[in-house]
Length: 335
Image (cartoon, rainbow, N blue to C red; front, top):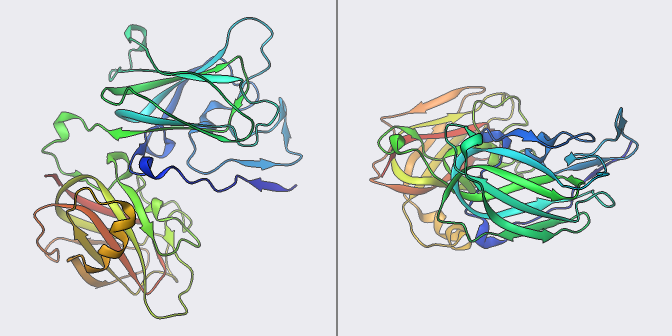
């Protein structure tokens, strides 16, 4: 059976600095939904782009990579409540109907509430995206004006029924007040960290570096192709919150015959620079960690080796000359 991959999609540049708060990797989950007869709603929250498998059917019909409800035969509409992985302010939504060509919803709206105790019965829902028309097999980017309020839960309403491949909720992570003075992983995805740019990601995306937990296999990390020219591979990561790093970890879990010979880390505190401006500037950033020899399948921890920085907002990971890293952790306090 042939498998079709979703076309490459690039998020508008002005939204690139925001975190997908509805990412299953950081704990986003389905609370409830009106119907998921054809396809489980939890598929909407997957990080990986949707796929279409020709000729794949299950007991309910054609297998689809997303959330799909049955055809509605009475008044009303379908809905799905999502608990965000982390609370945050909202900036934009991506309602992706890729591969839903004759079964996409006619339109959709979004509501949100703040219920840190998960008591949705008493929650006050408010509309953060009015009802908008949807189209066949495409990304729909809608921005919201409710960007000054913090929310914990989202309700996606589809009219009257149909399927959504992926649902992204882009916003700014709002860390609990008790974490203001706590030690946390400043670059973690769930704390607002993100990938700015990278030299190569042939086998594994650097996005995996900031995922929760340890890598589950060699594919769950950043791995480049074998370098056949001078130089080395690199990636730039933005911290979710600027801070002072106290401990640094480089994890090469599962990388045994393809770990880097060395890794170094450069760092900077910078405001109001675009991602495009950061790339050439990063070559000259001072070091946070000078080149260190790597071992296979190992967590490398650094304390005394760290060079002094009062506050940093971005790092550049240099993988010398190439290979794979599973995770990067920057333990410290928000500055």
